Each structure stands twice: as C-alpha cells, then as structure tokens.
Image 1 (spheres, rainbow, N blue to C red):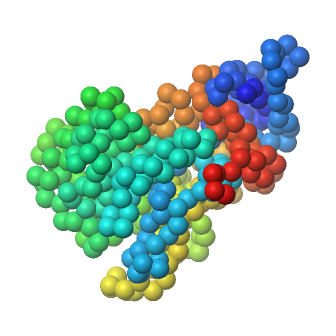
Image 2 (tube, rainbow, N blue to C red):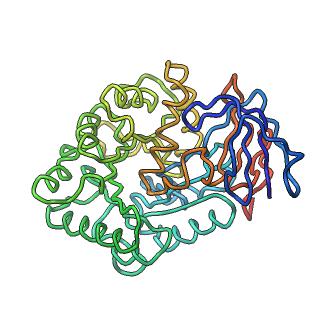
Length: 387
C-alpha cells in the first residue's frame, strides 16, 4: 500500500514546515517539499494534509493491555484495551505490562494480547513481571523471558508502595543483573519499569543499589513520577542517565498531589533533562482513590490513551512549542524502549506511523500505523477483531 500525504505542516517532532510525505510498504519513503503522484509507480492513495499538522505516531510506554485493577474487589477489574482505543488517540506503538494484580492476570495473557495488537496493525512490545518478587514470568526466569521471547524487553517492579514488596539490596541487584545480561544477549533495551509509589522510601532503594554497584542508571525507568513527593528524586536519577516517566492527567483540577505532564515537560526543560523525560497514559490501569491513610478505596477510575493528546494540547496552551511537548511521547519514548531506529520520528526509512491533527484545535483527524490508514477524518476505518 502506498500513501501520499500532501501539504501537511510537519513536526518530526522537529518543525520541518509544509511538506509531502510518501509512505510505501509500511515505511516512510520520502519527505519532500513537493511529490508529484503522477510520477509514482503503482496505485497511490492521496491524503489531503492541508490545514493539518503531521506528527509521529505516539509511543505510549505504559499500558495495561489486558486491564488492571481489582483492588476494590473482582468487580473493579478493568477491561482489556481495544485497537481503536489506541488509533483514535494517535497511539501507534505501545508497551504493555501488568500491575498490582498478578493473581488473576498473567504474563502469558499479556503476551497473547501484545501479539494480537501486532497482528491488528499497531506495534506492541511488553515487559514481564509485575509488582512483586519473585517476578511472574513465562519461562520461569526474567532473564529467559527477555532473551528468548521477542516482544519482551524488560521487567516490572514496584517500590515504595504499600501494595508492593520490600525489595532488599540483594534481590534488586540480582534482578538488574538478569535484565542486563539478557539485554546484551538479545540486543534489547533491557529496562526495569519501576512503579514508584507514594511511600516513605521513594526511589531510595534504586539509589542505594547504584551507589554500591556498577549497574547503569539507564536500566531503571521510574514511572508515575509527576508528583511533588517524587519529582526531585526522579530528576536526580535522570541526571544520572535514566529515563523518567510521568503519567498523563485527564483533568487538571489543580490538585496538590499531582503535576500535569505539560508542566513536568516544562520543568524537565528547566532542569536540563528534557531528553530523558517521557510521559505515558497508564491506559487500562485502575486509578484508585484512597482514603486519607490509604487503607480503603473510596473511588475508582480507569486510565485511557487519550490523556497523551490532552497533555499535548495542554502543553501548547501553556506556552510550550509543539515540538517540545511532542518529544516525550515520540522520540524520547522510542529511545526509552529501544525502538529509536524506527519509531518516534518522521524520517525516511522509519516506520510509516503518522498522525494528522487539525492545525487549529489539535484534534486528531487521521492515524496511519505501519503504512496502513487506520483512522480517517476522525473515524476508525480499521477495527480490532471483535470490535
């Protein structure tokens, strides 16, 4: 399939101005001032990009593909994500993981859903493990999961959370070693996504192992760090070389316990760590509201992929350039998960993942994933198997 996007204002995420984008066989073939379709070989579908902004497909590095939750009883288990939840919100690459519940949710089911997304037309990777140690795996070993199962690029772990383990130095050191060796053998990124809770220790356990060992800070990706109690420690880790990940906020109600990702992007620029900051949606994960002493859930929400574009629009409204607010969910996110050689930028040779936004409202109009037109004029034209 060949697609030619004509006359869009291109943000790659660097601003390139008005260009034509040629996509063929799932890849970006050319980005030029003007491409004449009459000179092309074979059928070409032309997409009118006038009045639209062309941006890279979004890279969402924290999603619960098979749902999450369950912390308020079985009735609070959240549903699986669908293909159109991704494409209607501009997500063309996503990373799936487990969360609190590794009892009724399984790594094997996550693997199946990851492969289903790949078959349906977007790009999906995953990490093994969950909150707890020993990590639940498919092969019986974190190292083997990463080394021998293609879409698995790392492992999940929780710290500083009343629902997670108290991780000893030896346990954490063993886990980092497993991830590092597997990543070298399989030539994968090899990350530990660290759910960072609101507990007393914050990221102290991570700093401790880095201080007494030769492990690299880049192995760790602390997430949910856009909170006042966590931000300072996360910035410290980013300055050591790690990627740090915020969680998109749907409604900016001015709450004291959270920082919007738009504001966190601005703060990352001020701290000089803008290339190490990402934000993700936590889509499919439960958003529990706890009582004051965090012993009982009093409300429950669900993360959705639309928080990414909401934060992008919020960032522009707050004075960031579109390039600045796009970087965390495109080029930076691709680097975080080791797909920077084909994702996160509009560059010839990269995957044909393009999102078109209305230039005035920044609302999504079109999504193209791996060269396939998935959303046209705001409507999903490709749906998941059972949608």
